[in-house]
Length: 63
Image (cartoon, rainbow, N blue to C red; front, side, top):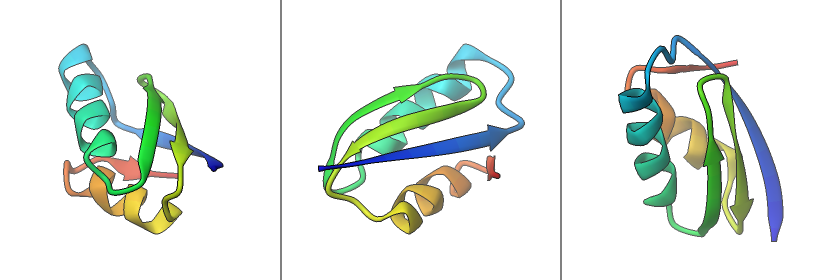
């Protein structure tokens, strides 16, 4: 299992954090995701690119 950290730009409220958490957990291979306003720590057998794509679909930039 791998650990991937992401850093976000433009997350301003709890609703966005909840939407991010749901989007990341729906990515195939994700076992857990700890999400906050500034980023996320994800565990699982998943590619970083798949996580970035899920976040960017919500209109949030990944640094």
